[in-house]
Image (cartoon, rainbow, N blue to C red; front, side):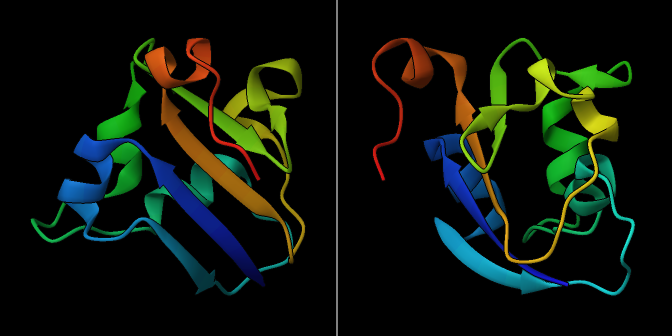
Length: 101
């Protein structure tokens, strides 16, 4: 499965070393959480380590799958199809107008 991940957060970009990247993962039934656990950073931490707190998306971040907030779907358990786009942003960026495509 191939998909695009965009980090609309300076802290995330600094920790993980990219703004937007196309990634390839093995599997057909992957969830948002599975994907976040497979995106690693420079310091050995994964995107999941940073944005998930107590099994939920940290209140500091919002995650969008193909333009829809995952919280309106099945949250971290939302299934992802290949070719999709995940955007992770600071909540303040979302309030201020978010990332324009």
